[in-house]
Image (cartoon, rainbow, N blue to C red; front, side, top):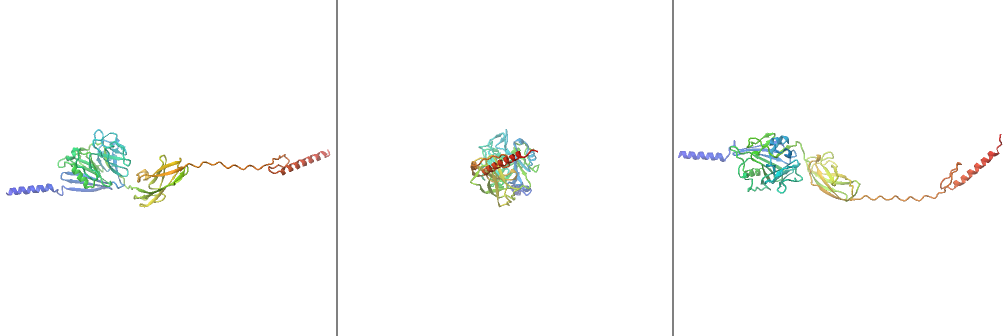
Length: 429
């Protein structure tokens, strides 16, 4: 009896120890290694995983993908080459990239679909989107996106988890996992790397993966290449324990870089104006008003610019004065059309150094008149009648329009004749 009770008690204790993790075996360790980046290392019975939360609203972080010319390197090599403080492996791969992949605006040359239609994309301003690329696995990229990664399947889409995956079937078994997700407002990126295939740590099933991602606010999540490819590098160190015991060279990667001290320039166009009509060849004023919704004041020396284009030429202008955050500033563009007719102008607000487009393009429609035809000069009045008189060299010149000049000429001739006669009568000595 005693022996049975003892055995029963021992069994109960063992079950309790298995069911309730001890303080030593259940650990959630949070760190904040960089501005805008938080890292969780979770160790529990059967679980060893890492979660990285990236604040896409922070101007001090940027997201980068492997460019096509750098494919098939290890995650550590990628992190060093791209100065990434956080890096994970990304797309499934075989004869090329499974699904759409792009880095620096360049789409990968060899892409096959094979179900990899779940895509996350990020632009230079950390604008992030979740896309179904089943209709465009080879691109083109949306205009706002320069970096893209694809996986299979959607772990979460619009906050919902399918949980009835047809493929890959390995989601129903525990394995090492890599996943990437966006929050509902697309302002947080969630990267997950879970170890597996080692004694006591088998990995995660797709269901467990969804539960962890949901815990951290995932709204759209994709399953990336896992198994022996699962790798997480932070600050030049390999953080996880790859199941192959070494890093694989993989086709593409997802990295987080730092831009210390960076400040967003953001704005919202609130008004615009242009003359109803202008004359070709003459300068005209077109103006745009925009509210400073960023964190730094605008000025005529530093801040966003308005770009105005007719499709062939571009005119730019900075604000006419300082515009503190929250205030509205005015941009005046001197525009000189060359041809007449209805002209459509496009204006947009861009950040300094040709960076982030911070507002949707706006449009002006202006009628351009042809310049007025030059008028013929007025006819000169007819000259007054003139009496032509001769000047004969006698010291008295005729003047046009003065008839008395003739009389003076006759008197001069008479005087000269008298003088000649007197010289002839003078005696010869």
